[in-house]
Image (cartoon, rainbow, N blue to C red; front, side, top):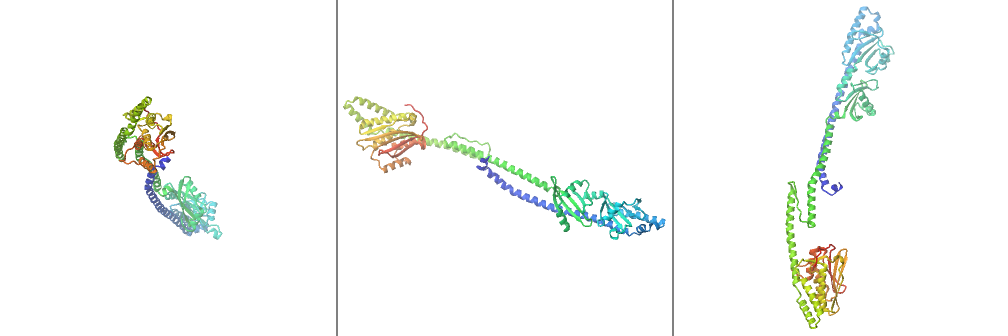
Length: 584
């Protein structure tokens, strides 16, 4: 995987596609977030407006009821019954009571949240309702009213009440002459809060002193959990600034947008909480959808990039392998492509190139082979006339001297020599046969020159006796020593043929102690082997060098230097790969 990521075009494809989709993703996120903020702002304004309307309506309803209660406290019938009821005539008493029944009905109908209205008159120990008498108010209920004179609503026995005592006990210190009490319908208040709540959210009204609270039906538990997490310092600051307080609160795994609005008149807070998913509407879903699409897009980019990478890399890899086969000489390569795309055209051109290359190589190789054979035949045909004349002259002298033993030996050697040099068999021979032919040549020259020139041979390493070499590669080098290196040598001429086996292969050295080799001539010979001219004369050295390199490549060939004996040193390099074995 690291190779796929580090050394290929695959990461570039992935990066390119990501660079193309990331700006779109960022713009989409910005637009979604901007939309969410806009929706959040609009929803906040809408909820604040609804809360304000609800709170103002409730305050107005309760304020109207309190005003009616205050007006009722000045009623003449109520004043008489609370002060002179025992002295009132019977008929007037009942008339006043009946009128109070009517006024209680009117007070009860003045507010949609009032469940009942009653007035308690201690003097007659009666509580007058809209249509009947009831027992006196419990003392603790009256005490609760008296203890909360500044609160519009007070709580008693799990009921929410509006009350008025006359006279006002805290200010007058006297027991009240009558008490007007209206009971609020908790169910109606809960239903009103339920209509205020949005979706699966909720609403509640809580008194600042925690004396009473109203939650929408079914929302008591969730509302209590949310209220317990409201930042009280932030809420207190918002109350001082006469502002609503907004906060995001998490309950379990759900998040709620919570808004608190305070009413100074009621000394209570209106609380509304909405799930965040509903508060910003479908935009939260859009965010999740966008995130899912982005993740899906990244996966698609990675998979699609890998697919493109395979569609590009695999055909290229096949072509690289094909080129490597061609590089090692295998021209039997043909590429096919099933898809009708650019690679099919490229493969067709590759196959056409291989076919043309094979034709060109065959032509060039055949031309070189023909040139090599022509040079070899030319070399074979270039029997030095002087060598031939001198050989027969030597043979003539042996005949005059009746040296029949040497005549037999000399003619045998000459026969073997000319048989080998005029052969038309394979172009390659075993090294052992080539050395035998070169020795035959040296034996002929030794008989001719006798003590003037001597030759010293080292044996062939056993591993190279059957090593295949081109025909006539050794004798021309020895002949060069006789004809050029030792031509002017009157005595003590010496030729050494040594063979060394090493890790680079076999090296055959031909050295002489001639004195005619100058530095300029040595440089000229080296240049001829390094960069032979097309029209230059094909000498024995150049012919051997060319044929060795043709067979063995750069690892084969000749190297020229000055010998430790003083003349020319020719090193023939044969690589360690064993050649074809030949029998002679």
